[in-house]
Image (cartoon, rainbow, N blue to C red; front, top):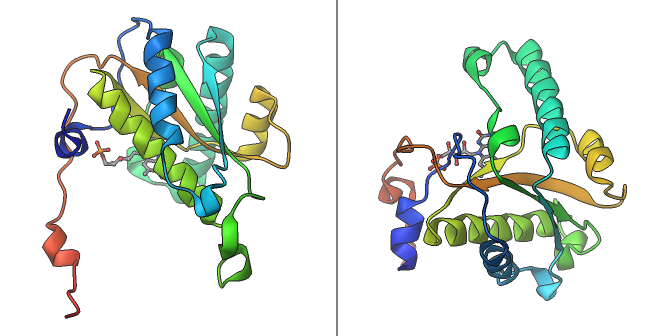
Length: 190
Ligand SMILES: Cc1cc2nc3c(=O)[nH]c(=O)nc-3n(C[C@H](O)[C@H](O)[C@H](O)COP(=O)(O)O)c2cc1C
């Protein structure tokens, strides 16, 4: 699939069919992730592939707790109907874990220490695009606190769970979220 088609066609999916995803596809998706750029090519990511129902339930419970906490704090109305059931029903959840020690030269610069997160974000977008190119859909999910997820997935305290990526076949059409015109956000310096 052409990369422009994938970038435009990929949309966040929050409703998955229960069909399992083959190991060959998961390996292809993770190989795509590892081709992402990273500072000094430090590749600060690790992946945990979760298909276990009990573990997905635990991640769902943490998401629910976190969503309630944000709702109580902000009163944001849209959160009242936000349903994170996809964490239970997506056939695969990939946890992307970052290593803050592998952040590159930005650790010496102003607002340093974010390089590893940027690299993980690049890997996550490769996951999203590869997933779409394989006829599947995904969701980049971040409504959780780091420590409870560390505990659920047995991640050491010196590493950071960056995101949970839900993957599977979409259940029906995905809502198309529009974009602003990129030229309205661009300045050319010539
Ligand atoms: C860093 C990041 C965090 C996100 N976290 C969540 C999340 O926790 N829950 C969720 O439903 N979507 C999450 N999203 C998905 C966005 O809501 C989605 O990309 C955006 O609304 C645009 O929709 P589209 O991906 O379908 O184009 C996240 C996206 C990014 C890049």
